[in-house]
Image (cartoon, chains in turn red, purple):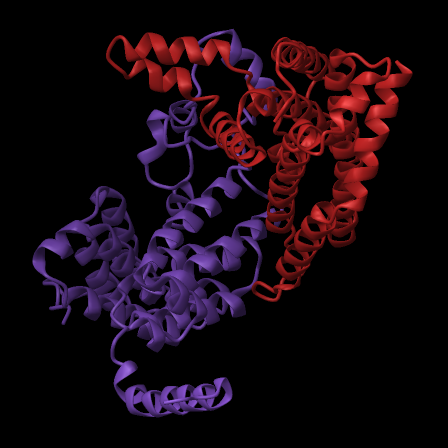
Length: 259
Length: 288
């Protein structure tokens, strides 16, 4: 376990040395503050649109940070040939996969905490309420979703040629699932065969990332999602993460490391 | 010929300057975009109207606190509730049932996924209606000719937020962009009548609204007959309030011709006739 944590520590250090997070955070903060500064009909109590915009920016930023950070991990080690001294130590390929995953996930978690703290400070200062329970659920679910995404990117980084293609493909897939995930079965029912069966199969087989998006509950002050549902969704997320990590390991252990 | 890089740069700059002074007067006519009086018009051109529709829908989404059909749901094409609310239509239990666009869960994924979606049909209330205003403001900026944006925005400002001054200003802006809109004039009359209790101003704008309406093509008049009914019925009630009984009855009779509930209007006419006694003419006068 220590080996995994040591590998994860390196990834976390890399995230705060790189500028991706800072740039995206400043951009999110500036856009949110600019949106919040606009006065509509001389009413300074209007706040939901600011929440909506800020959460959208947080989702986009977190997705970009997690995908871009993860996609370059293994290709960069191979390209710099640091993978060889790493594997020469008593570190297995499974350790590398899990260590990289854990590092990226924890680093994204730190970024999420900073983003959501900013969100709570801005919206709380406007509406003078802090529904911490709802915020906590939203952060947790968001983080669980990113675990699935990070594992998916690690898998992609084993099979795809370059980090750019891994990042692009993953962002398209994640965006597609978030936008169409709930409706794919409805769309399937309107299609002729064999498209109906294909879409229905995809619907049941894909990871339902849209469940983890609790932005509406936060924006519209709709209270809490039942804890049992959050726990089950967490379990579902853990299963998908494990599936992707295992698939990544299967690919990585057979992969030639020479570039 | 041997040019130094610096002299080449100076020549190119001089050429660019000369071309700019020559082309500038004609370049302004190449695109309508640059002439637009707001930023959105300059950036998006006519494409901004698509965004305006989206933002108007966002106002309706906010009004329902996120419980809203997507493009994949069957109920997505229906009239927006913020529009029907601004016409004073109240929802019946039947309407509520019809708006359950989710229906029964289709499978276990759908059933479980509903834990993470808003599944309760609610409307904003207790001054939270203000949350729809940013989207209406953006919709008005993006498409200044979308009439509903002004009427709906003014209705919520006046009726739910008690901001008649802001409602009037928004409608005046709408009227500047759409000088022939009877809808905006009707809503403006409501601001004067119901909020400011200024009967004279309300009468003037409603009468102007009727005139603008009668200038429309016959087909358009037929399509918008409910607007006409609202205008003349309200004028009838206003004249009743002002004690001008013959005029009140005249307007209500005009409303009866297009109203889906002429009997209710007849009862109002009967009540006024009792109050008026001999003042009422037997035959209705011409409107305009």
